[in-house]
Length: 211
Image (cartoon, rainbow, N blue to C red; front, top):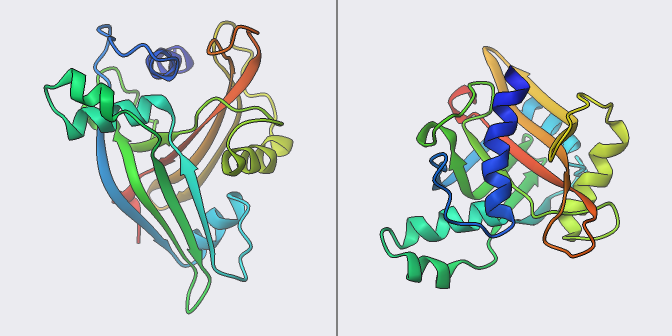
């Protein structure tokens, strides 16, 4: 039941990924601008999971998927569909890792707040952002780097038939619960006529559990 509910949420995200903005089956989460900061051992652990060198300052930009950019455009132009459509363009979240004087990982940009959507299943982190569809050999360089970092460690979590298949789910915990996650889904990418396979990565965070 958990996986079915989760896939229903992701189906809505996928419809927006392929450019279908008139979704009435569920309310899509609102976009929020937010900076989330991790410090200490958790910052280092997350940085290593993201493939950062934990001995030097590192900065990367992650282009947001279409579901994220559409929600952001609606936030900037509430009630004005035409203006939101015109403003729907590439946006990026910035992730920085600073090892000194103590490890610090900073994620800046725009997130989807799952407390504002309908049908959200509780284990999904409150704040998420997602990649555009990518493959191991094509797509945005930073997302592809992350895919190549995490995917070799992946074991198949579920043999889900249909559009989505969870192939990797990495979670980092701190008392009292989860604080960070990277989830990779295998999808059928309908943006191309070739009907090729691809992946979407979702990064999630619970800032109410941070130090």
